[in-house]
Each structure stands twice: as structure tokens, then as C-alpha cells.
Amino acid sequence: MRGAERRLHYASNYDAVTGLPNRDLLRDRLRQLKAQVQAQAGRRVLGFMLVRFGRMALIREALGPGAEQALLQEAAARLRAVGSQDMAASISEGAFALALLRTDADELAASARRVLAALGQPYRYQHDEFHLDPSVGIAIYPNDGVAYDTLARGAETALRQAADGVGQRYAFYRPELNRDANERFKLENALRRALERQELELHYQPQIAVDGKSIVSAEALLRWRHPERGLVPPSDFIPLAEESGLIVEMGEWVLHKVCCQLQAWRRAGLPVVPVAVNLSAHQFDERIVGTVRRVLDDCGLEPGLLELELTESASMADADKSIALLARLKGMGIRLAIDDFGTGYSNLNYLKRFPVDRLKLDRSFVRDLETDADDLAIARAVVAMAHGLRLSVVAEGVETAGQLALLADLGCDLVQGWLFSRAVPADQFAQLLATGRPLPAAA
Ligand code: C2E
Ligand code: CA
Ligand code: CA
Image 1 (tube, rainbow, N blue to C red):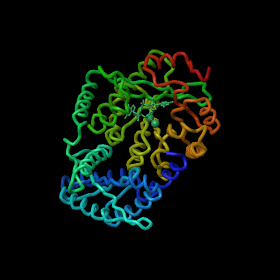
Image 2 (tube, rainbow, N blue to C red; image 1 turned 45 degrees about the horizontal axis):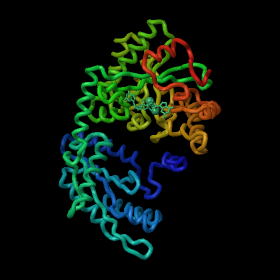
Image 3 (cartoon, rainbow, N blue to C red; image 1 turned 135 degrees about the horizontal axis):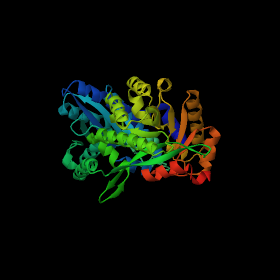
Image 4 (tube, protein in one colour; image 1 turned 90 degrees about the vertical axis):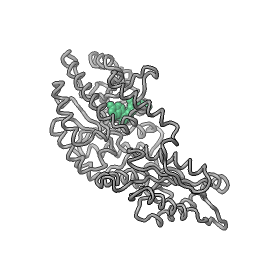
């Protein structure tokens, strides 16, 4: 996303072309509806309905993006009319999605037919009539998945099936549609075993004072040393761990490992610094308080050396609940940070009440800092706002001296990134701590 577009997205959460809610709002809506399904124990189902148009690419080719936008706007208006009690969203270019709470799959099918009937009518653009050829794919919570991404993928698979077929233009997700399912199953089993076989390890990435002179803290990042695949990055297995629920156990392992490692370093006489641990949204409930307390006790670590990073979207999803949980963690003496700041949408009224210590400015704003005036403006605003709320700011993904200079200029407090160090294995990080600052940019 370009800076200006992102600013708009950041400000409004509504799609610029259709005016419909965007993916983030839909994600939130799904979260609410899932809770309703859970509360009503099986008496409702939640459908994730994806809508795409077979002719859209053709129309854009022939008539240009203006025509496409006009037609999408008309389609959005029809969707709004047909599903007035359901949230319809623009989730990506040319794709709509709806979140539907119904009593059963038959009702979902009836809704799909209504949507198709409305969107299948001809469209007028300038003096011509067009058919857009809509198709619908549906995935059902909880049968087909729990996480947003799983449901979206399931609906996408179903939609492809519907678009390829003849006759009715909607399809429900069926696991056998998904050729990757088997692969995922294998990976999930391997991940389960990874915990037992001690294939997981932690790497540590230093967070440096913006003057480049000292390591102030660090972030622990999970790695999976797979016997055949080698080092697997977290982006390849964390989502799976989240879907399968393994993340809770895995996250507890991470907490334990970090706290006991810190305590071991300290016993060895190293000048330790606080270390941040990433918390998945799935870990962020009542249980986390007890888990953290137990882990600290177990390792004999003082709470001030542990920091927890929570993403903006996880913490804002149910802000009142988050505030209460964060307050309890804070009360134990743990440090707290909001991760990936700027990528979700923050309610500043809530942020003001969050008992956190730090904001982490997302890497996507740092990357083009030297060339994109919008990103620079956003970074400046985040730093000013954070300081206004007495929070410190860590910039993520700092790779160049130019970015560092700009961040220093903005008054950013800490930087983390490859300019100084990648995430390194524990023994290497211990050496960094021991020798003080063998950091290229500070040399
Ligand atoms: P994150 O929390 O935003 O972590 C920062 C990511 O940026 C890390 O990727 C880090 O290696 C990378 N990075 C740091 N400096 C630079 C830089 O200068 N340039 C670039 N291009 N990248 C940089 P990594 O280690 O692959 O982690 C990815 C994500 O996986 C993390 O994003 C975090 O969301 C998740 N994750 C990692 N470890 C854990 C964990 O223990 N628990 C949970 N729940 N999630 C984790
Ligand atoms: Ca993080
Ligand atoms: Ca981050």
C-alpha cells in the first residue's frame, strides 16, 4: 500500500472505492459473531461468504479501471440492499465477503442464492449492459475452521469450485477440495512433535538506544529447526500453531525458555537486559496471568526483566477486557508493549487507558522512511503521540543509516533491525551482552 492510501485506510477502515467496511472490520465482526455462536452452543452457524466476479478482469482490460470501479460500486450497493442485517465488506481488489449468522447451512444456501440473484442482474455502464458473472464460496465456522484466515481460504477454495462448475454458482467448502489439506495435517503433526523433540529454539534480537551506544533490551523470536527442512521461519508455522491451538503450549514454552535463560545469564554474571516475548492473541486471556506468574516463580526471575508484546489488533479487539488483563500483568511488574503499531486501527481513547510502556512502530512505516513523505509523517505522529502518553517508541526493521538518522531526528527512543543485528542464537546474544556493543553502526 502506498503511504497516502494507507493513511486513508488507517483513518477510516472503509474501502475507498465501494465504501464498504474493510477486512479489519470484517475480522472484528467475525470475532463477535463467533462469540455468539459459542454462547448459543451449536444452535447457530456462522458463514464466511466470499463473492467474486468472473468478468471483472475482462471488463477492466476492455474499459479500464474507471468502469471496474463504477461496477463494483453498483455491486456493493446491491449487496448492502440484499443483506442489510449482515456485514458485507470489501476484503481485497474485486472481492467482497459477508459474515452471516444463520440457524443452519440451508439458510446459508438460501442467502447465497439471494446474493447471486441480486448481483447477477445486468449492470449498466455508460450506455451498455454487462453481466458480471458472480460466484460465491462459503466456509462455515466452526466446522471448516476457526481463524479468519482459515475461513477465508476455505471460502476461496469453495468459490473456485463454484466458478469452475456449471449450474449453481455457489459452493460450500469441503475439505477434500483442498489439495493442501494433507500437507497441512502432516505439518501440524510435525509441529506437535517439534515441541517434544526440542526442535524449537529462540533467537534474540537486540533493541538499541537510538544513539547506537547500548543494548537496552531484546526481542525473543521463535525458530523451528526442522530435521529435513532446516530452519523454518515463524511465518511458516505460527499461523498453523494458532489454528490448531498448539500456540498456547508453544507460547508457554517460549516464556519459560526466555525467563530461565535470563536467570541463567544473570547467574553467570552477564549484564542482562529485559527481553520481550511475543504473545499470540490466542494466549491473551485470563490464563496468561497465572502462566506468567508460574513461569517467573519457576525460573526465579524478577518480573521487570520480562516484557510482553501484544499486537495492536489483538489488544484492541476487546479493549475493555484487554485493559483489565494488561492491568493485572502490569501490577505484577511485567513490562508491556504494543507490537506492529500502525497496522491495525487503534482507538486512541483506549490506547490512553492501556497500561503499556512501549509502542513498536511497524516495519512497514520504517522501510520507506527516506523516500516516502507520508511514512515520515506517520512515524513523526506516532512518536509524538507515544511521548504524549509517556510511552517509549521502538522502531522495527531498521536497516539503513539513513533510517536511523531520521528516527533519531524524530526522537524515537529505540531501534531494532538488521542495521545493528539480526536475531541471533542465545550463545551469540550472550556474547553481545558480555562485550557490551560490538555493533557495526556504533563502531
Ligand atoms: P514481529 O514480532 O513483528 O517480529 C519482527 C520480525 O522482523 C522478525 O521476523 C525479525 O526477524 C524481523 N526483522 C527484524 N529486523 C529486521 C530488519 O531490519 N529487516 C527485516 N526485513 N526484518 C527484520 P521473524 O523472526 O521471522 O518473526 C516473524 C513474526 O513471527 C514476528 O513478527 C511475530 O509476529 C511472530 N513470532 C516470532 N516469534 C514468536 C513467538 O515466540 N510467539 C508468537 N506468538 N509469535 C512469534
Ligand atoms: Ca514482535
Ligand atoms: Ca512487530
